[in-house]
Image: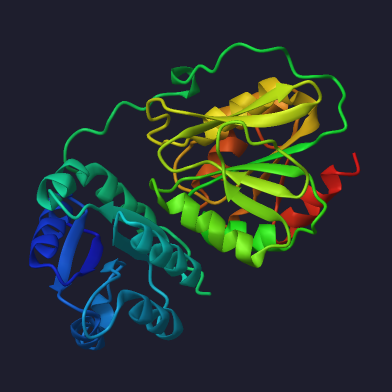
Length: 356
């Protein structure tokens, strides 16, 4: 019997039909309502009573009331896990990033052409995202067999020298997923202009990371940008791995820089936290701090263990402050984490690295 009650809100009849079909095929999910706009959704929700949806899949661009306005109202009245279903465009990316900041927990993308085939092919991702969202702690402010789950061994950057024993440069590597956009904003806005250089993987679709980085750059004292190959990891700067590409850390003399690579999905993600953390372990060793934050799954656990074995300090966000405790929990279980800390304390931990 289905355990997850889902509402779909999208002005496209085709999208509603395909989303409902894909989700209803999962044995533990049932779509209770599929409506054309937020005003109809509000009427249904007022009648929901005890049958309030566990997850809402929400389009952004709709007539009568846009999805962002509805999301703000929802988070004020009754915070509910929301998955944004957005077009893969720059405008869609910017609006989706704003929705994540308001309280949505995840984004899935839809192209303008070939929608039905795309959504059918992306069924596993959609179902997994809805299941993950249902387990999320909302913070206001089935199908075909899954693809093989690859480890960081699948991405092999060129060989390089071992990490230097001592250097004045420090590197902070952060990995996060579901709930990470809000968490990263809280951490990065707490940092002063002078702090160690940061390299970050946030699981996010292609084109969305540029909008996310631009938003953070506008509210932080430090510089935040989407990474490009050759970018130096410099104090007071955070580099965010671009969606659809892996990012690795490299060293030239006493300085660090990043390389952005194509490659297969690792732990079903690209960019992958494991790929970044492994490269940090090999290039920076004891000169690094690794932090694994809120997210579903186990991406980053193996890489954080490699960092700890290489002498790096390692932290995990604590369960109470996580939207989803999956990634930190798995890293803790594998012995990769020295300490767990609250989200509010992570900024202080990063600043302390500069004084080591």
